[in-house]
Structures are given as structure tokens and as C-alpha cells.
Length: 169
Image 1: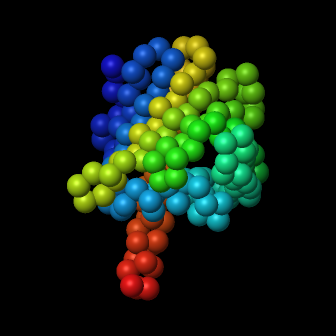
Image 2: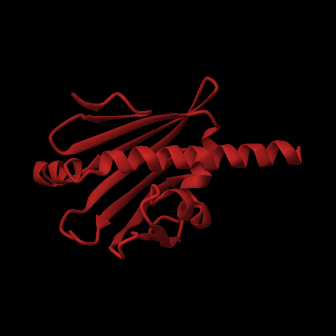
């Protein structure tokens, strides 16, 4: 298994020729990471990784429901993704398709697992592409740096949720 990144908080590996796996630990409970991943107004705060504004974060969180997230960069370039939820277990698992709308033939299947670990949680995202060409295109798109920043921003939002819950308690 090739490891692409070790210098950031998320580790990216290539388990087989058609897969990308991303592992990231968080210093917050998995329920808060799941909430930040599945709540539209929170997705709008982290998905762009600081490279623009998320203008659409539609989430129909049910099996068969669709999601669509759109970012408009500072130069006006629109980056849009959508998919369909195929399996959901609250706070534990999301299985959904993902289509980068500029390359609609490259649909992938994402399996996102949220788990507990000592002092926090872990997220594992397994991206299953239909062929190595699509996987390699994804890896070579520059996704890694944006993903690192986005996951850092996601953790910041989850920490805010944790602090807000502590204040209410």
C-alpha cells in the first residue's frame, strides 16, 4: 500500500489501483465530526478549504437522498460535486456516490467511517473509483492539500460544537 502523505494530520494511502484511503484523527467525539460533515450550514464553513465560498450545501440525509456541494473560488470558478446516499448509520457510517460535475464519467463510491479512539475520534474515507485512470486523476488533481485544510477546518468547527455543548452543560 503506497502512502502519499505523512507530514499533515491526514494520511492518504492507495490500498489498490482503484482506491484512495484517507485517515484523520480528531480531538473531538465522532458525533461532532459527523454533525459537521452532515449539516449544510456547517459544511459551508469547511468544504472550500479557504479557496472560495461554498454557495450550495444541499444534504438530503436519507438512503436514496442526494447531496450537492458547490464552491465558487475567488476567481469565479465553480467547483461542484454531488452524489446519492446509499447507506447511513448516524454518527458511524456514510456510503455515498460522488461525482465531480466537470468529469461526470468519474463517479466514485465513498465509504466514510466515524469511530471512537482514546481522547477523540477517527475518520476513514475510502474512495472507490471504477478504474485506475480515474483514481490517478483524482490523486493528481491537487486534492490532497485542499483536503488537509478542509479537514483541519472541519475539526475547528467540531471543537466549536464541543465548546458550545460544554457551556450549555
